[in-house]
Amino acid sequence: MDIPLDVEVHCTDGRCGRSAFIILNPASEEVTHIVVREARPSKLERLVPIDWIDRTASEVILLNHNLEDFKHLDLFRSTDFIYTEIPLHDTDPRLTALWPFVVPSKRIVDDNIIRIAPGELAVHKGTTVRATDGRIGKVDEFIVGRRSGMITHMVMREGHLWGQKEVSIPISLIDKIDENVVHLKVDKKAIDSMPRIKVKRRWG
Image: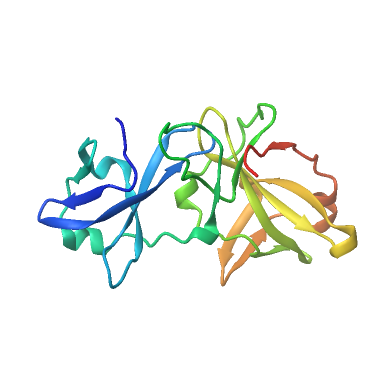
């Protein structure tokens, strides 16, 4: 499906805005959403799932949902996304990739790791991480499996400004998440012994 940018977007019962961005899954490089900017005066930008698109033409995108459904979609926050150079659209460079998700530079053997879909993990960058014996760092980003497209690891940044390091923690070691804190099942010593996983960041 060709998805034109900066064109009219219509719900089943009326115009809802104009297409502004395309959202990608960094693991599969598949389009997951489009961003639709509402008309003035609000100019709010909403994330529209790709399966909401009924059909497209050179100057219009038609959705299969109504305006009321559209008003309940999540807002697009540009601070949560980053531009990428993945060439999915030849006529407009305004593409974005989902952030803070990255992919491993080599395949991770994750048979014993709980894999979570990116949209199902309600944790933001900077969330506090606590081991069983106290605070240990903050969430930096998440590693998405190349083949599965699922989150396999949380990348945590620990230490102070001049001595920071990144640690890749399997999702299976997360005990619970509450009040903006990620609680782990292991202590600080176990975290320090974990191997580092190199990730591939294709955007800049």
